[in-house]
Image 1 (cartoon, rainbow, N blue to C red):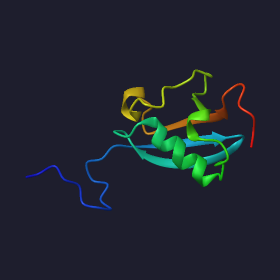
Image 2 (image 1 turned 90 degrees about the vertical axis):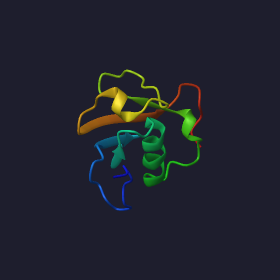
Image 3 (image 1 turned 90 degrees about the horizontal axis):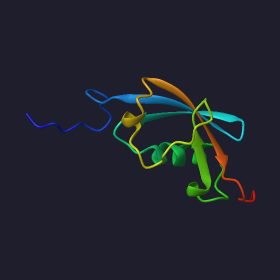
Image 4 (image 1 turned 120 degrees about the vertical axis):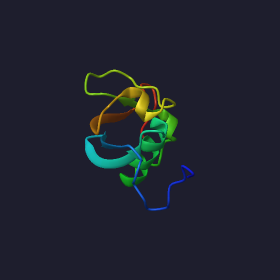
Length: 96
């Protein structure tokens, strides 16, 4: 039996429900643990219409204020099923 997932099927996939706070505006993103964190960042920016700056200009931080590596997979952070993260423009990047 192959390990292929049918489109629309959540079976066997571990999801993380991420509440991304973008400039004070929360948005909930459902992401797969195997995805890099930058995929969730991109979705959050699109949903909040923060598209003036490229995604790499946005820092991702946890509730303790620690910067997170956007290239790491979600599962590597061991967030569990739910987490709140914060997106903010990096220092020195002007708003647009």
